[in-house]
Image 1: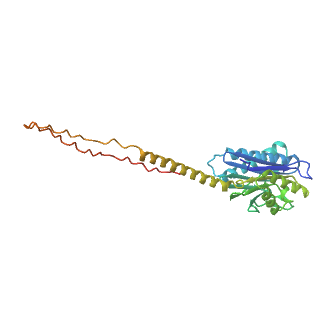
Image 2: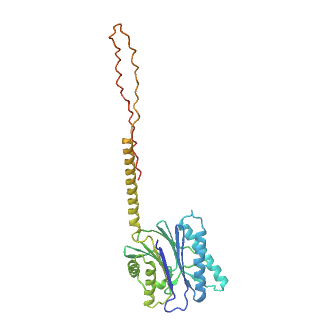
Image 3: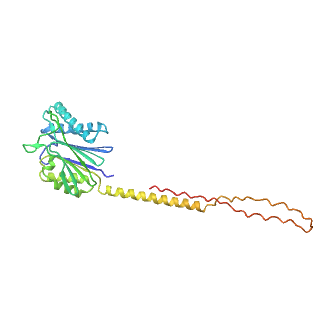
Amino acid sequence: MARRTAARTDTGRIREGNEDRYLVRDDRDVTLMAVADGVGGGPGGEVAASAAVDELAARFFAAPRAQPLAERLGDAVRDANTAVLRAADTSGNASAASTLVAAAVAKGQAVIANLGDSRAYLVRDGASRQVTEDHSGIPAHGITRFVGDPRGVQADVYVEELRPGDRLVLCSDGLTRHVEPEEIALVVGTSGDDLDSAAQRLVELANSRGGEDNVTVIVHSALPFGRAASAPRRIVGLAMFIVIVLLVVSGAIAVLFAVAPGQPPSITASPSPSATASPSPSASASPSPSPSATPTETPSESPTPSASP
């Protein structure tokens, strides 16, 4: 099976270091993805972004599997905030903070949470729709909600029902500074099942237009193109094959029962009466004719097979 998620990160053309971090992890029937864009400059941003994605994964997958997906993700984001504060204190970078956009996908449903201006887009039928809302203000690209906030955090949480062919895109603002939503849809749509190509082309497009910031992109396929359509056809074909086999087998059994010999006839012989001697020398015993035996045949019934598809 082709991979369903691809990711790329790049320093860009201006920055010396990359403060973006990303996460892609599959665990049985759940895929967890996240992009964190460190703020505060220098090592502080890297520390915050790393602590955010590490704690997010640890807490999300440690939660009870029976817990609703939205609750698991929301709790994990709050724990990520605590982890960033702890990492900032330990590293001596008191102002370290990070944006965070995360998505948990399971059973055709995507639960998305965000803080800051890292975004999630849903690409469907050739169009791109921004799912998340930026938490930003003045000055430009300043963020108003982030992990590493000592006041605590409450992420916005969105739920999307995915369809076959949908693409979910998570990215840092290093992409959206240079690439419009329609262009994201175009690149992702023309890349087909090649998710690595889609992610790489988006990064290259941002860099070709200046690459003013670190750029990170995750592209996730809800279902590979054609997979959803071909699966039902395969199931129907298999069911028809099973029905045909059962009909052939049941027909053969019926024929065998029809041509098989029945039970041997039951004949009851009646003894001939004793001849009575006649005083006439010419008299001879006339034996009674043997009764005509009427065989009793019990036909065997052929069971009618019940064909189960």
